[in-house]
Length: 304
Image (cartoon, rainbow, N blue to C red):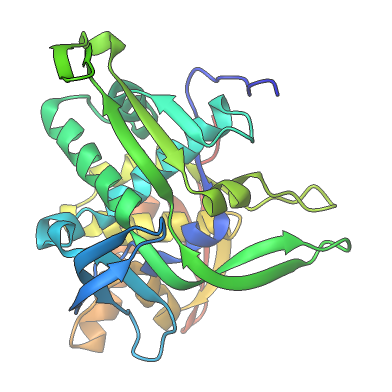
């Protein structure tokens, strides 16, 4: 099959819409438990695994090997979401639907993410890729197929985003690597999981897809916010992108999406309003109260 056309620079990042709007998938857990062993979405058995739920009665169980479930890695969950969006974007640009392996470079990933390609960034991307390969969600609801009348059939399964991530950086013989490849010839080979691939390529009889577009300029603008505001702001951007760019939300729902946790409700509301106002000032979104408890939100940023 012919390859998709490569664009010079994406205005928007792409991601499966339901994972874009499901902020819990990339939320840092409050409490985790360790089990002796667990199987990952690839079928690989791992010893010493960390598991968690975000809500006590939730069916979903989130799984990461203990070796990469340290606080240092869990702090990168929101960045792993950005990396997944960048990989999804590149896959949709470069690959034919039947080819699950994306060939790219750290420099190209940085360009799509809009960040500088330096040593610190490379390490962060490597850690994010490690998370995305190992990260497993059990009892995850996903679209299985579209019916002939355009409705979606849903089911639960063991889910993961990536099957493999390899940095090809050396040449050698059967005994091992002998020489480093020059930086311009080094590459990343990323294999998307079969199910994530199906979701990206799925199309209904009315040409509907499961893709969401996350405004590149909106993600860029979050860097101008206070450090503590960035993750709540990105949560709103991804959520609204998964909803088509706008939504009417109750205050409690919005606070939950943003991930704001304060003991006093008055402080929680103040924090929420401050973040919304900062985002509006940066032309990321517009908002208005339809009632004291209902807010209308719309992303301002769009494709260039």
